[in-house]
Length: 124
Image (cartoon, rainbow, N blue to C red; front, side):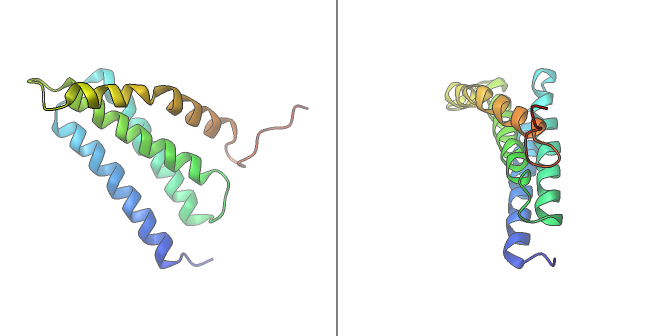
């Protein structure tokens, strides 16, 4: 199946957003305690966008893309909050990024449990 122009534009836009948030976060400094969010953002977004592009209408692509974008937002928020000297609204943005942790854990857990078919394994 040939990818449509709209899907290609959406894939490119999500990739630019994720890479922009991760590179913007790294421009604020480097924190070992937050590196995992950058790695999650890039890896989950890359897998989700690849599946979205290669196998349209697959059940797993949306979970991976959302998990990647959310990890990128969490990474940027924590980097912004950890910056010294404190930036405007850094407490609020750091709080917003930490608030997303339970949702991120649920998304990543669901994505991993349903990988690669997009369905949970049968109880048997």
